[in-house]
Image (tube, rainbow, N blue to C red):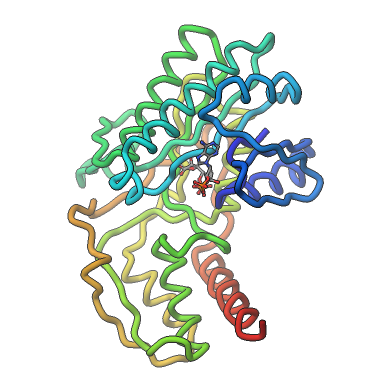
Length: 315
Ligand code: A2R
């Protein structure tokens, strides 16, 4: 069962579980959201309502639960901390309490974030799971809280809860509020003549660890099966790139003449200089390695935006 499957990761994870692992997938979405996954059962579920979760779990009786439902935006978390705490802490606790009431013990994968580490010092890079966490925003604090509750519940109630800390993931269909999708969308708009040939960028010197969403989905499927309950695993590529390098790569994939300008709105007040995951623990537990290169992913994201824009023009 995938809880919160209407977001970016959900349909990639569903495809991975069905195709590579032969699993029967049941997926949930919020009432107002649209979601179609072929061969999967879809249910409406609001994780703020624990009784709804209990009823659904008794009906489906999943062996594995992937809990993706979240308020996943750092900027929305600043604007609406109450909602973020409700969904990410109370909602996750509802899921865990519902699982605790079951008569059997499914394996549950809880998705946290590399953001939990907060300001990473240079000597802590690449960062390991047992490093100090110093969450620097409300989103990060809620995910750190989810992680702590999972560790406590695993011990106290002998539950099979596995936590991950996911680093930046990218791929076709991601919202353009995230940097790579934003840059690719801007290039596609310039190519389509919908925008002046100027790219607006934020801080280009930050280094981040990017992984293709399909590689991330593969890691989640493996960790749900092979991860150790009560443990936390980083999911990233283990390598960081400067945003400037990514920008150059994206621009090199276009024949358009593009000028680059800084947009002060895209500069964050505090930005961590380098975020890079140590993925030794994930490798050792599952044998996972990233398979899709940054260049391949970026090319697909560009093509996806080009198609979307030309479909719009034709329509
Ligand atoms: O906020 P919306 O309308 O996009 O819906 C999100 C949904 N969601 C909920 N589901 C059930 N009950 C709720 N009360 C509730 N509130 C929000 O969870 C969205 O469809 C889904 C999460 O998807 P994304 O925000 O696209 O996250 P993504 O990229 O799929 O990442 C999955 C996980 C999240 O835990 C992130 O925090 C983490 O990976 O990085």
